[in-house]
Image (cartoon, rainbow, N blue to C red; front, top):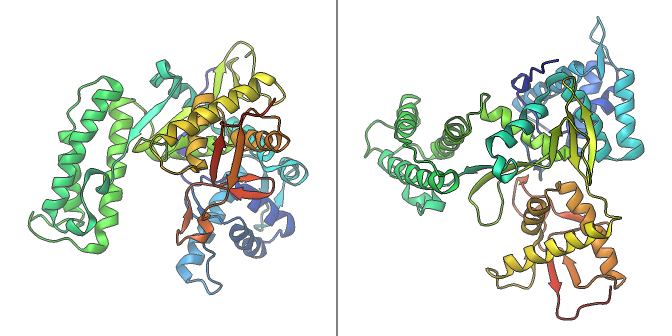
Length: 428
């Protein structure tokens, strides 16, 4: 049977907690009004916003009409998707109720854990849209030499030496756009061994910015300062789209890729990040494979397709000594790689996590689990090195609005910096 993926049919929502929030709200209340009130409460409890990042601030009790409307729109969209998966039923009078599938999925979270919930939700999503089938196969096809790695260079003005205070006119934006074009062309030559002229994209972008009123048509004229972020966001979207189409030949939108890549990250079938150490931009790569044969070694079957293929997630067992050794070695290599350019004994744990996940092709969930297990071995003196984990200023203690990089929970506490001592090797 030929599979026809339709990832573009889902246009919103990255965080899978939304589905638990909805199911729990409907379990408690069948009428739309009370279910929505419960949805708002749980949404705040889970720090859910309208993006792929969690919120670090809670909405005020006296919300504006616009905030309530946005939340209700989110509520209706999650209802629509959950209905597509057969998780809920909407009665003739608008009453909401869970199906047997919805009840089973809810129990996955409450009786097991959120990781099991995500895997179960994956099955519903894949049966409906085959979006991960399309994504994983696309990654390997686009870059088979590097196991499906997708690279998207992204540069803010500051990265290219343009201070915000010095960007005031259309001419300043054009200077930034010229520098950005040159840098992207150089990156494409380096990463993809391809020469490409992006002039057409740059000129079209500037033209569109002027036509939309974001930029004045006179180069020496100043643009409204409050439009700066919108202008830079437009640059980002256009260039990501250009790379996706021109270099990779992706037939769907960048928005579609984002949705499924970041959902895949939560489930563990792929990884996506904009914080890989030493690289300015986004990378995406699979942590799973789709093949016809049985996968051997450290792979877990997650889904069977009508065309005979199967999706296997890379899930090495900590109980195997080779997994423990490989993880600790990768932890060490990554730590000392970052120590070379960092004066501090303690290194950002999120940066370490990025390097280890890429080197081992494991999910963020597995890294967190393995680190906790390694740390407990360390406390018992069973590791060849000494690991120290501490909490520097956590995201919640800053003025940030969104949780862009999650700290690691180890032994019931959040940790975000790590130090490794090899001078006093311990007996294993």
